[in-house]
Image 1: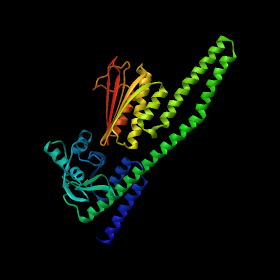
Image 2: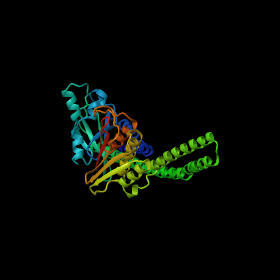
Image 3: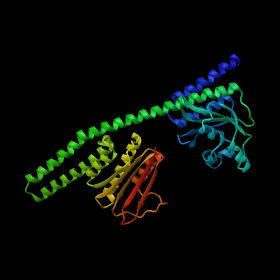
Image 4: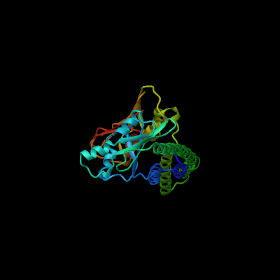
Length: 372
């Protein structure tokens, strides 16, 4: 490699490093660095797949895809599998691979799905930081069927920088989540120490006012103030529970039983299995359980509920059942309320399954299963 070429490569890496170091949004970072990489290398097209621990991929960034791959909202890039993804999942892709024929392009040609602009091959590079893997970077150009060693080395260096940036963003997001929990706990303490005490004092004052006056209208006014204060006090306690889940350190079921007691519900519990569950899963189930019990209190027209909780080495299942009024619901219908939609979204965010069963007069059953 000539001195001039070496200086050019260093310049490329420096520009990309600056972009990666400044970014905090994964999508923006990947899109920006891909555009920069194509510009400085003279390549014309590229895309980045991020992969999860189950081997599922999603298109995180792309640039100048040919019409055949761009069509139908990039359907071919988002569905199915291909040789580079398979190699990655089989741990056969450990460094920049010179050229791989593109299965997605070949299928598009066979099916006459659109113009491919002469793109037939691409180089593939894994994205990683240490032992942690994030996905793959694919780049190519029309009619280009070979990458030189220095080109592969450059792509590998850039891929390592991308992997390091993804790791940094991931750690930053984790720190932000930790800070959010700390702030939530602080807010809960403040609410408990100030607003909660004021509402309690207002309730006592209203009770004293009832006893101090003989005027019927004034008594009714004080009774009304006392009822409002008690209702607001109940809402505030529920809010504090949602902000800061006291009792979760004693286990999820214990926390949900305490929350049910606070709502005035009688809850029957059945616990099976003895496996421990990750903290994130436990907090998610706690939030879902809160929402389900609150719905039971507000809408089910019953004060009784049943909770089934099962843990195993490969996952956890939580079922909450009430024998209340129920409602019309079909399995293929859209979920009717925001609270239920939130429960489903929380479950699916952890690759879990959410099932809802309800019929008028027969109560409601919510089943949650989250795999490990």
